[in-house]
Structure formats: structure tokens, C-alpha cells
Length: 271
Image (cartoon, rainbow, N blue to C red; front, top):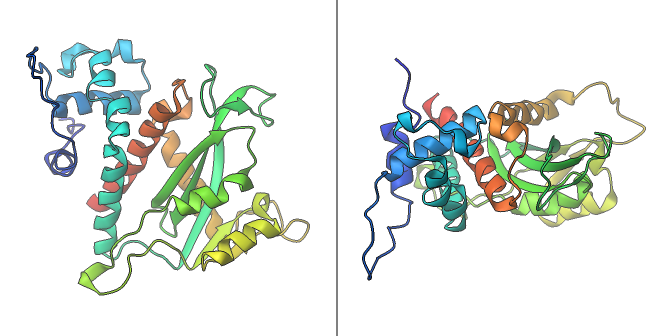
């Protein structure tokens, strides 16, 4: 028997973070599709990569446009729900002592964006075709701490500061006193970040830079730690809706990306 897309445990976390339904002082139709069913439709689109219009209504999630408009990526992303879900799952991992703050890795990868839109640009590695680039920070276990989006024509190093600052603080486990943690001790990156300003940015935040040096270190190996971020990028590509960007709006693509990060963290929670 197939597992449900939205388990009872996952829904309990998400339902507590979802904003209440807006009041209708002038009346109106009651909701015909519950939020949980609509969320299952969103996750089906995320995992399968099908267009919204092809979402089978036999699944009980309503139409694809219902999922997109009412409980879908755009509205919930504006409310910050998906970001809160990702943060709540990271906090669970932090409470269990599963997040390693000693070493983190940062890297980026481009995906095609044939429809163009916000935060896209000509990809110099793909014959100038339109693409979008995702920048991620992971711990030594490959858990996604933060993700940002830019056009494929933006250099990797230009998003280092924004991506590191996107890490949200997490409370210390076991109710220990102290400031919430949001900075890794060391950050590993490839040669695309080998600039004095990148090292200066990290040191200003109390992070020890571990950046591969051009002309010194070999380009044929990923190193002992940087291969982990490459593996996490491949995990994101398992969600077929993320392998090619079809959304013209950057906030909708960011919503799908954040949901993918949350599901990866949820898998780690269950393991």
C-alpha cells in the first residue's frame, strides 16, 4: 500500500503553522477541499513534475488551480508557512543533536528555466539558455540550513553573504542556556568563492573560511567535505518540479524549493 503524501505526523506540524481562514463578512462558498488534501496535491506536483492543469482530481485534491490559488505555493509562501515548516523541522533535528555546526558547505547549481521570469538569466554553462541558480548551505550531514535563488548569470560568490545570512537561528538542544545557533564554525566552498571579499565576509561573521584555492588545489576532486553539498543538490533534483523551473514567478519557485528542503529534513527526522 502506498504511503500517504501527507502523513499524520507531518500534517500535525504544518497545521499548527498555517494561518486561519480569512473571514467572509459577505458570505461565500465554504471550502470544498480541505487544506490537507490541497497540500497533498501540491506535493504530488512537486514530486511528479506534472503541470498544475494535469493534477488528477481522482486524488481528492481538487483541481490544480485550486491547489495553486488557495492552499498552494503562492499564498502560503507569502504567509511564510513553508519557511516556518522548514525551520520547525530543523529545530527538531537540532533538539535531537542531529545538526553538526562544526562544518558546513556552500555551493550552487543551475537548472533550466525555459519560460524565463523573475530571478532568471542566461546560463554561460548552457549555451546562453535561460536558467535559474539555487544556492544552498548544508551541515556535514547534508541537512539544508538555507537556500536562496538567483539568475544563472549571477556569479556564485555574489550570493555568499545572502545565503549565509539566510540561516535562521535555532535554539540549543536540551534546554541549554545561550544564544540560538545560526553560524557554523567552518564553511567549505569551491574555487568559485576564492576572493578576499568572501573570506572577509565569513570572518566578519565569526566563520572560519575553508575555500579551495585556485591554481593550488586540484579540480578533479571534491575534497573530504564538499561532496556532501553536491549530494544534497542531487537530492533536490529528485523532485521533478525542481529539476526544470517552469514557474515565471520567483516566489512560487522559492516555495517549491523550500518545500523540497522541508521534505528532506522530514526524511532525516524519521530516520
